[in-house]
Image (cartoon, rainbow, N blue to C red):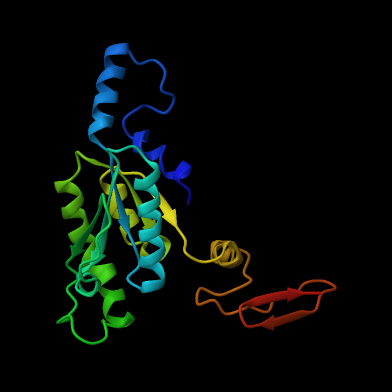
Length: 212
């Protein structure tokens, strides 16, 4: 995700699709509204390999954006407690209640705990935060593994930019899964399915389908 990808979303939900047909007065009012709506909400997946790249993107946005652009990173409370006094100019680190039992000492909660919280507890907490800040929020940048935040943004009419921390090849592998399922090549659990095709030999390798 580049700065050029995110920046247009700062303005998208304050104009119509074309931008034409608006009176000068309405355009001036829209421009004034945009000037007050310059906060981007980041929603990372709660793991170091996901939060660190997202913080780097946040720093890049505020460093290369206008002075009135700011970023708020919504971090689960059990991760926020372990980030100490980390401070990035114009980047706010906000704790989102997760409902996960944690005292802040030792290792953070494992995936079984926080994955359940992401689906069943945190959406309502994020929605409450967004509603309180609705007048200043322009868009969300959401880690694809934190996709639970996308329906929340949709309910509030906020645009979303997806963020993928891995290689493009890994994203393309994940993105093609629905197509593989539709064609009957893999099951819903990802298991390769043997399909008889004329003049082909089928080989199933872990995570790979090969036809010869």
